[in-house]
Picture: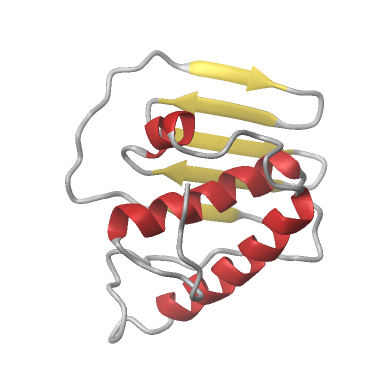
Length: 143
């Protein structure tokens, strides 16, 4: 069965951005950016990450720390903590806004997703917290 990691949040204030589609391909990973949708897939590990959020691509390119700034171990640890807190909030719609926390994130710390996946997921968590004035797991989000 295919392991899926979906991060899908569509903001109420949909503003269409006109940017040209871009595609980057590696031997084992493929990242496709189309407007504000980022997709990462690795057929060998059978996972897929889809991030749909207006403004994330722009934020990632302009505000996020560059690739290599954090090591992979740091990203994996933070992603594990953030995903656990996120999933907890999904399961408590009476306490947390169900429009923000729509679906669980299947982030398995036993799987080595690689630097690029961890980098994008980590930066999405940071972007989400800043854009929605949320704080996951007590860390102050900083770009």
